[in-house]
Amino acid sequence: MRLSLLRAARLNPAVKELRLHLCQTGEESKGVRDFVSSGYAQLKRENPKLPILVRECSGVQPRLWVRYEMGKEKSVTLTNAGAADVAKHIAELGK
Image (tube, rainbow, N blue to C red; front, side):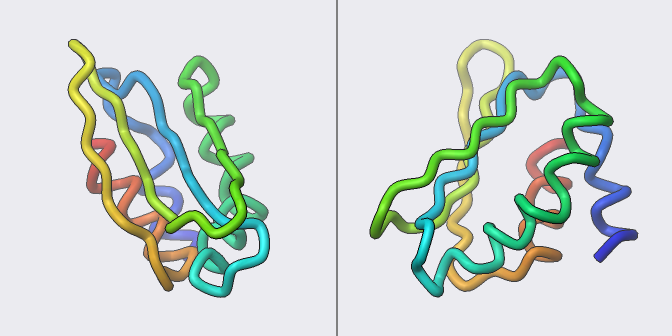
């Protein structure tokens, strides 16, 4: 996972915000929780001015939202995704 996280660390300057929505206890959000505990610090270190919001809500479907310039947004579902999959999605949407 560390290699995929390193590729995802530097995001395109067109990315203006990252939002991770997850459930604190739901099994379908386990990979997102694992990513937040293991990969958030490095991602924030590499993108210090980028707002990275982690939103926890009981029963919510895990999802990644990326906001670009001019208010354009893209999202991808993270249901049952592992921490490496979350890093991969961030890398893909952060290009």
